Image (cartoon, rainbow, N blue to C red):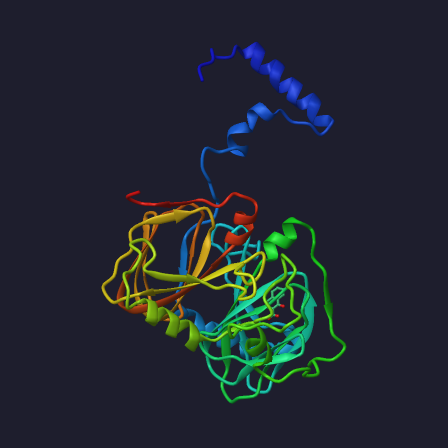
Length: 350
Ligand code: 1HN
């Protein structure tokens, strides 16, 4: 658009006008329109990689500073370097590393924020969700849907660490957060371990079960051995040039994402495989569960190894190379964007 330069007098008139309307809490759209409606996503989020080998000792140090009981949840938040102080890893998602020491209980509570756990380190802990416990094994993807009671405990002899992913920024944006603590630190078990997986996650459903449209999955653990076995099986076939062998986790009763606000994915990249660049509107958090290689995000690149976590901002090109057979877990707000008709993906070379 071409406009003639503004005279000093006209500039003064405008500034004076902006000042006067400002008194009434108004501001001119034409000064901000370009920033409000950018031609493509212009995220403040930056790409970043957290090396687990460097974080682990600090997570363990937190174990000496505060108990799980006092902390309620002993977590070191992974903050996006461009969003310090906001407790988020992308604009819509929160991530942190949680530690539970032998004998500890992180007491039962519930909140409207939805959570996922990805178990990284140590054995012997459990999570209980609405009266059912699940043993946490490395690589297990566990969810605690909105408003479900949940606590964690460690019955073993090792510190246990997992990655938490929550939709905290989404719920904060909507001002829809509620939370309460249980009177008892641990829930009374209502069902044996494995019940939900047997009822809802074994290609069958209870006779009278009819899920409501936005209901989260009743399956609350996606065991790593099953995830890995599926990826290894499909890896007998041809990889997708942009994604390798990648699957999304679903509510097995509906095919929808496990939780309405967070989508989760698992990806197998054979040794030597390099993906073509792809970008999508959902900023995503990735965790390497097996193998290692190189990740490129826009102009940045890092080496990644087991348990490393990296964040890819919205609409920045992602490329991965696996040096050895690699398994990556990731999560994002994709189901929200898809429900709203906003999600886009662009694959290089198409
Ligand atoms: C929470 O409930 C957990 O249950 C972890 O383990 C992290 C961060 C903010 C709010 C609630 C958990 C959390 C959280």
